[in-house]
Image (cartoon, rainbow, N blue to C red):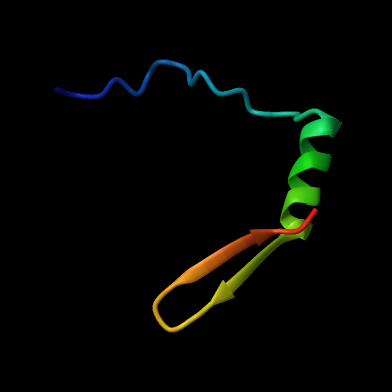
Length: 47
């Protein structure tokens, strides 16, 4: 079926996440350590 491109997108143009979410994601990425071995990757979260 043909896709209708004239409908407006459900996603808003300017998404503004809450400060708590941004802080959580930044802290998570800082705590995440990935150790690569020969054939495996280990993901360690050090809180």
